[in-house]
Image (cartoon, rainbow, N blue to C red; front, side):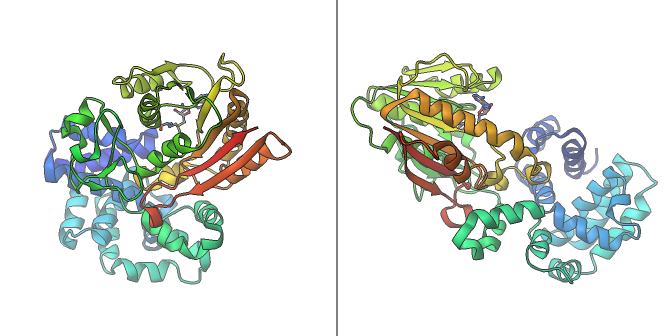
Length: 427
Ligand SMILES: C[S@@+](CC[C@H](N)C(=O)[O-])C[C@H]1O[C@@H](n2cnc3c(N)ncnc32)[C@H](O)[C@@H]1O
């Protein structure tokens, strides 16, 4: 394969759009297979992740330059055009190389037929810079419609994020911009197993256990991460585990439960915090393959039992836990910056299935915690239907539950994923 980097990039985009692959899984495997490393691997990652993030903007531009519109274009050719547009408009690739290399990939990987078409469209796109194109494709559009194209988010997500910002809705552009920046890798030093000072990088801003790796830092090269004394974990996730661990409980503090634990990042931190107090943790996960990831994450801890049940039905005694975490399955709209394709895959109707499950899991958690104990309800989504409205629906009309605190973290303010956490106390 000549220029294997761009060929791999196109294959990864095809796998995402054709087979619903997750780019975070499929691209590293392809890079490994083709022995693409170092700067070439970083270039391929930027090509693919950047193209996926900015797909909404590029499709609007391609729609403008293609005489029959973007929908008339064969999916493999469209992926190649997006790849070319990203190089032309958002990367420091010289325009002639962006066009000719992308056209070569089309010739090699798709065939001769679309070569002239691709060449003509990319040349047109190369005639203006990104700002020039944005002015054209948002002409006549206002507010969120223009914003959706400019910041490359589906309109319904822009509207949901603006609603979630509430009184801070004016920050929407900053939030959308933060979603388009790849996050720095953050480590967690699991207390009792390692200290942040033993890890490379700089201290976190919010969690006392966090360390932020320098750009290009490889967590796989760190001994503490390899052997489970530390892990890779966004600071927002660390803060959720800390919020549950630090909430005051009346009386004993011996039995903790993580109802939805897979893949186990929060369970590992909670387990370490529980061990420091002589408490035990049940880390439950419904899917066996994800429970296996939890077992791996907590392998250094002797106080964690991993179970595999539907959290709504597991065989625990009512009132048998002092602290319970419900890190509920959700749309993940708070983690768009680390999952480049997910914004295009999620649908508003996903909420219709998730919200009843979230309510049922929180209801069960409130049954399993003892009076005087606490429940933390968390989502890696700021969508109000999954956050405050779930808490209101479950606690409204109950006089045995008090909402002690709610907190929404944001990428553009806190540098974390947009995690939500409510701490509830049973009476
Ligand atoms: C947001 S993730 C949890 C992330 C995890 N706490 C961590 O920090 O690594 C939600 C998890 O809930 C699991 N899940 C979905 N439905 C469930 C149910 N009914 N009971 C228990 N777990 C469930 C999913 O498989 C998924 O692993």
